[in-house]
Amino acid sequence: MNSEQNKFTANQYTKFWLPSLIGVLLFLVPISVGGKVTIGLGLLADGLQAILADYIPLIMTIILCLSAIGSLIVKLIDLQMVKNSPFLESLFNIPPLWIILRLIGAVFAILTLTKIGPEFIWSMATGGTVLYDLIPVLMVWFLFACLFMPLLLQFGLMDFIGTIVRKIMQPLFKLPGRSSIDALASWMGSGTVGVLLTTQQYQSGYYTKREAAVVATNFSIASIAFSLVIARFLSIDHMFVQFYITVVVAGVVAAIIVPRIPPLSLKKDTYYEATGKQINEDVPEGVSSFKWGVQKAVEKADQVKSYRGVIKSGVLNVMDIWFALIPLVMALGTIALIIAEKTPIFNYLSYPFIPFLQLLQIPEAQAAAPAMIVGFADMFLPAVVGSGIESELTRFVIGVMSLAQLIYMSEIGILLLKSKIPISFLQLFIIFLQRTIITLPVAALMAHLLFF
Image (cartoon, rainbow, N blue to C red; front, side, top):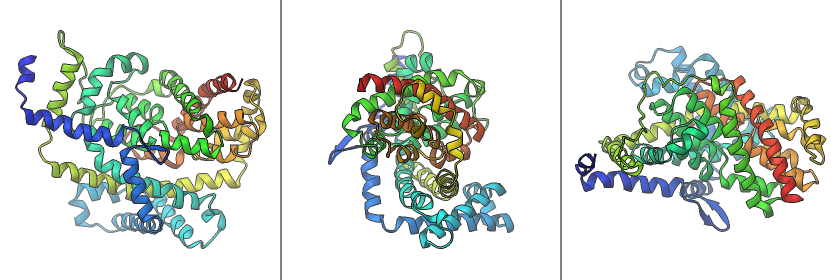
């Protein structure tokens, strides 16, 4: 094995460690700027968002309209240009349901931007939240995440870390070691970046159907930065350390239990058919995990023959997110918020949680119950519902739950439904309920201990 390693040149080693180091610095190293904890990628995203703040809603409305019109034209007219480009074909030649959703997204964006039509569509509690608060964040985060993601994926870092931490991830979570990178990218960056990472790893043959579904629904945890936003909104930021520790503990408990019960336990351990299995984290006898990890990493980095190809794939990923995902966020996110704000559906669904909360001795259980279920529409809604509750302990539990539930349709849910990972809307709702039922007692127990 040593002879294997010795045949690598200094340039080959540099090709592994230099891009990987830049990737780690951008995605995984927390930095504090002006009292706010973020990552390098977050600084770039926040900087661009600040510069373009006034123009992003208009820019994205134009992109949403182009996406909808392009899909309609390709469906109605046989264009040779689209047929000759696999990328344009996958971007615009889509099923009728997705075309309808793109059209709805474009219409919602136009109405929200111009404030024309029914106010329940464009108000700041519904369409306004999606177009002015959610989409600008997604636009800039996905721009930089897609462009720099290859630094984590293509230059050997996943192979190196995966080989080293496999002994922990496999028995505890039944996952390959590289899934730890997904979790870190989520914790330090954003949950959507984690899902994007998981989707790309699945399509590249590094996760089975079961592993991809497990990682996406259990490890795409909200970032530290977003957790701080939730804590501030609920006026519990003076207890942020205890708050975030509770989120992590609840998340780990759910990540151990949820993958071991249906529907996730019934997912097949087979790889994406178009790619097949590409992963091998097994370490040969007599070789240290570290040495073997370095060897696999350098071999992986050596496969990159053209930096132009890496940049091109990043740009195409950005286009795919902007033209295919964000229209769905606008359509489904607005619909979910309208249902949450204007109908009593979530109130009715939350009734079973009232006795559960009372059993756990959570004050103001009746007021807190809707917060347990509205998180399925959007992660920020539980905080909106809970902000008027007097009990600090109850606000603490609501904040923890909004982050620990993980599955919310305005962002993560849509990203998963659009991806190649085999998971349905009903399965996402079941996993959301499972995570709620499992993490609520953990959040309540730790809240009682901390507020005792």
